[in-house]
View 1 (cartoon, rainbow, N blue to C red):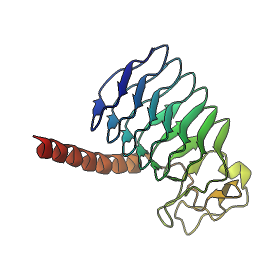
View 2 (view 1 turned 90 degrees about the vertical axis):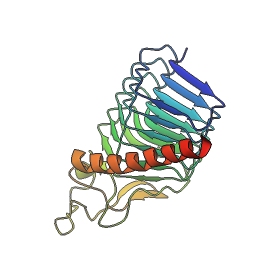
View 3 (view 1 turned 180 degrees about the horizontal axis):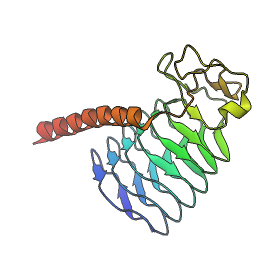
View 4 (view 1 turned 30 degrees about the vertical axis):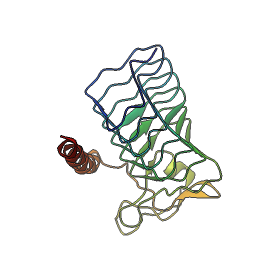
Length: 226
């Protein structure tokens, strides 16, 4: 069973919970758009840490989704979502999984020591400013085109195997961005990989900015509906 399960719930917030050590998922939302899932622990679950299905325009941020049997965070058939500032570590399957979920923003996450770092299929999304560290396979994608960087000088992602794969790469003008793209497949590459890893301070500033926006939107919903 799941720790928290919501079905056909709209404009909801799930925050501040310990949804760990369940036989099923830690947090599971179905057909629940415009929801925010933040500041939760979803660890050591029998299936997923956090799973969203048919939950478009939702946000998943500042959560811990570690040591789950399958995926840390799974977004399926959910479009225009934001996944940022999460820790997804030591999961048996994917750190972050995107299935048939397009126009999502995946940023500022620590995705470490999973079976697959990030896996995207049937999806076109923007994935940048994440740390992909020590995953058995860093990224798995199909033929869909994803955007893996935020341009120059903002940069792309940190890949822990970058220097091993591209030993002749050089840093661009002391920017922390390197001049050889990190290639995932023929349709997907990070044009501006970051070395060293994306800083915690910068990640926190990004998270705080996005959190401020999320709170403002939430207050507006309360005001409009009161």
